[in-house]
Amino acid sequence: MVDMDVMIKAEELNKEYRREGAIIRALVDINLEIKEGKFIIIQGPTGCGKSTLLNVISGLDLPDSGKVILDGENISRSTEDRLARIRRRKIGFVFQDFNLINNLTAIENIESTLWPTVLRNKEIENRSISALRDVDLLERKDHFPAQMSGGEKQRVAIARAIVHRPRVILADEPTGNLDPDSETMIMNLLKKINKDYDTTMIIVSHRDLSKYGDTLIKMDKGRIVSVK
Amino acid sequence: MALRLWKKAVVLTLRSKRRFTVFTLMYTGLLIWSSFSLDLTPTLGDIGITSFFIAMGISMFLSLLYAWIITNYRRREIATLKCIGWTNKNCQAIIIGEILFTTISGFLIVIEILFHIVAFLGYFYSVYDQDFAASGLPLISLSSVFVTFLLFILVQLIGIFLGTRRVLKVRPIIALKKVGT
Image (tube, rainbow over all chains, first blue to last red; front, side):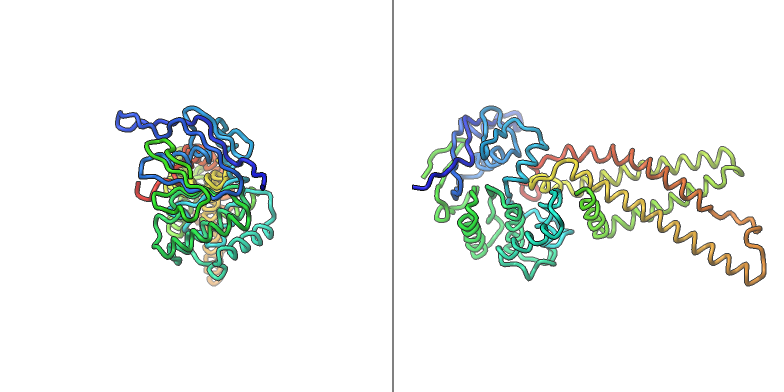
């Protein structure tokens, strides 16, 4: 049996929001262990806390209590700049709305992840071309986001998420704005990246994407209700 | 790395054509105004000085406004960049680069305009065999433009410093919010 390390460990996570005077318990006593190289689907209805969980385990949001250990580092009480550097080294993000920069071409959007690093320009370009090749979109490298379809934009976003060779990719509703054909293509692409690079994948979705995952985590009202 | 970010800031500035054109023209006008005021100070006295400081005040206000517009317009982009590992300083470098590049563009346009005016008048006077230097025309001197430009940059830096503090307030989590929410 292959010995798999723990990539993300969440211990007793709690998070509350105040909205119009009411307290919403977004995360309630969450304990979670995600092993390296796994493909995890977090599923649940809108408002169940799945996006909050993603935000907390990526360091974009801080828990009220509990801790998150990412690849051996406790990130629950880090400064903003330290968290940014951790994300730069270890995390890739894929967003529902793609979040590409409209004034940059596909290749520049991908390169933007590496601009604040000490890598040489040629190395940045080579890595970005390689990432574009991985998502099979090399011929669109000089196109702007406005000239691409939703599926193509998401593939560029995936290339941007893998260009710095992260340990884990977090995707928040990555197929939320796509048609069924594009959804299949994007999920197969994420699965391929997971297999080829042994990158841990955590996908949050309200849709049923369970057939793609190694583990399906179901959430409701801020709690994990099942892990299969 | 900082140099690379500044280069990318130039690319982003040039691609935001409308904003770049409007602000460059405003900076050009302000540079001409303040250089002219500085040159006329010996003749006009307090009026020249007052006019110069008004132009500097407007310049600082413009740099604040520019930083505010960029930060607001690019709020989601800044949040996305923070998500993918950019620090506050990296994001600020892009905005500072954009404003400084626009100011420098304004300065270059002023220099270009001055050269053209001098060339035109020089030619005109030579045709009629007149002494151009003795004409007493109220032309802006190059030294005034340079002094104004340096003071402009100084004032800009203060404005930029205050304006880009807004970048610190952009939380990366905004990038995950759905468009329109």
